[in-house]
Amino acid sequence: MLLSDATIASRVPIASSFLPSRKVLNSRCFRGKRDGSFGCQKTFKMSGSLNFVANSVTGDSSASVDFDVPFPSDYSELLEQAKEATVLALKNEIQLMEIEFPTAGLESVPGDGEGGIEMTGSMQLIREFCDRFIAPEKARRTRIFFPEASEVEFARNSAFGGASFKLDFLTKPSFFEDFGFVTKVKMADRVKPEDELFIVGYPYFNVNEMLVVDELYKEAVENTTRKLIIFNGELDRIRSGYYPPFFYPKLAALSKTLLPKMETVYYIHNFKGRNGGTLFRCYPGPWKVLRKVKGKHICLHEQEVMPSLKEVALDILPST
Image 1 (cartoon, rainbow, N blue to C red):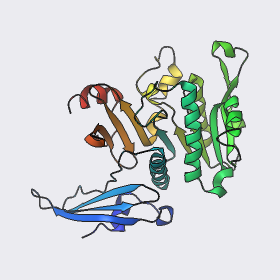
Image 2 (tube, rainbow, N blue to C red):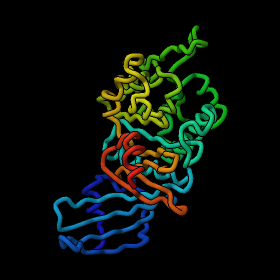
Image 3 (tube, one colour):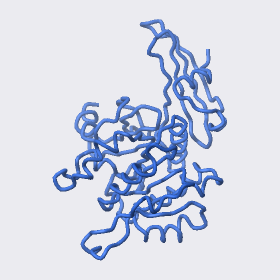
C-alpha cells in the first residue's frame, strides 16, 4: 500500500496547485514487529533538487506523516528547501515566520565571517530566495526591509538592481550616530495598503531594529492577512538572554511577546568543537540534531519543539 495524497493532506492541508510536480523515486512498506502496525515510506522529488520522505503508519491512533528533509549540500538546495517550507507554512496560515542559516558557509558558525560580508551575503541570498518564492505579479506587493537607508541604496545598486520589489528601511541615522544612536522609522508611515508580504533582512546590528520589527508586526501584520518573514535576524540572541533585561527591557521582552507567535520554518545552527554538530529544522518536520560522519549528516536526536542552544551544546551533543 502506497502513501496517498489524502494521507499527506491529513497532516498538511495544502492546495495541490501550490505544490510543484512530484516524481516518485522509491517506496517500501513494512509491518511493526511489536504492535503489528502497518506502514509505508514513499520518497518523492519536488521541484529542483528537493526530496521529501513521507512516512505513514496505520493501526495506531498516533499515526502521522512527517517530512524527512536532508541537510542541504549547497546554498541552491538550501534556498529550495526554505522556499518549499515557507510555501507550506503560508498554506497553513502561519503569519509570522523565521528563516535562519549561516552565510559564511553551510558549516560555519556566527563570527566565522566578517559582519559586513555576512550581511552582504544575506542580501544576495534574500534576492535569490525572493526570485524563487515570489511570483512576478506579486513583486510590487512585497516590501523588503533592510536595517538602514544606506543598505537600501546599496541593495538597489547591487543584489536588487532591476527588481520590482519595494525596498525600505527600519532605522535612519541620527545626530548621535557616532555614539550608536539611530532614529526608529515609524512603520505607519512606510506601509502601504497594497502591501501583502514583508521580508525583514538581518535586523540584529542595532538593538532598535528588532523593536521596529515588533512595531511592524503589531501595526501592519497582526489581525490582517499580511505575512512577515524575518530573514537571518539572529533571534537566538534574544532567546538565549544575550541582552540583559535590566539594560534592554524592551528587547528582552520580545522573547515572551513576539517570539512565541513565530514559526521557525527553516533553521541551521552549527556547533564546533569535539562534540560538534548541527541543529536543523525544515517546516513542518521536527527539530533535528545532526552530526557529520564520513561526509554524511546523521540524525542523533529529534523532537517537536525547538531545544535551546545550551541544551544542544551541553546535553544532547555530548551524550551522543
